Image 1 (cartoon, protein in one colour):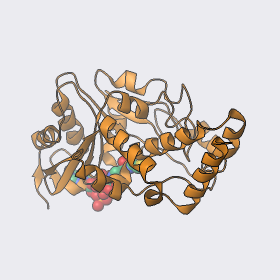
Image 2: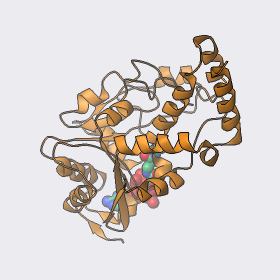
Image 3: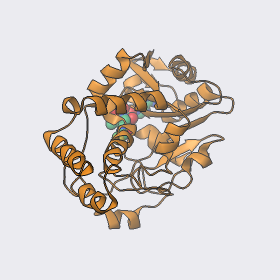
Length: 272
Ligand SMILES: CC(C)(COP(=O)(O)OP(=O)(O)OC[C@H]1O[C@@H](n2cnc3c(N)ncnc32)[C@H](O)[C@@H]1OP(=O)(O)O)[C@@H](O)C(=O)NCCC(=O)NCCS
């Protein structure tokens, strides 16, 4: 059996990583990485709430996938019952009677606290943004965009940047930044050359671990010990701004050759 971890330990670790009273905090987690958490997944949620009390809001991604084509997934998704696939803490949060879940069939977020309803509202409305899953997951109005707008604290317990959903928000902004340079007539055609609603195609995935190291070197990440594992966190605004700068400054370092070809095509078209 691993180290005993209490609600107080969890709150203290989030505080050590930068959480403040009144904060908006989102985290990804591995429950067993910590050791033995007294009270299990619920304790992790309550410890996170303590870290941002009074007046703070805690959110976790509650992602869903049933392996079916997009249209069937939209139809089958049930806001109240479709389980989160991304870990026991997420699934426990989803079922917490205090939680509000955003209504999106792939990339929903569940949150508790005074800002929870606002965070969850309107997921998928406003301007759509490209992603391999749907054009609404990371839309202008989505919890992911609000995490950026409100400069949330974004944390990981015992898991790394591979789990970072915000990474896909960054990718969506990278692609839309390029598409925005094109005349309207070319935009749709170029967009459809990339991965689209789970249709196969290249996508501008980048190496999260390498980006973590780059951002850590810039002092943007705080890491603390929590039981047998590490908790690290960053603020969404400086982190995503810095990551986008890195991608734009040095695309050859980050992207698959097919994405580099696509980017060149878009830039050439934009100069015509
Ligand atoms: C995949 C992942 C969830 C696996 O982590 P995990 O700790 O093995 O699994 P969970 O967090 O679901 O917790 C369940 C585990 O905790 C254990 N557990 C149960 N009660 C516990 C307690 N009180 N204390 C500690 N561990 C406990 C369970 O036995 C189970 O382990 P087992 O499968 O070996 O039996 C994690 O590595 C990860 O990647 N998390 C982030 C996922 C994410 O958000 N992805 C986003 C993609 S864009």
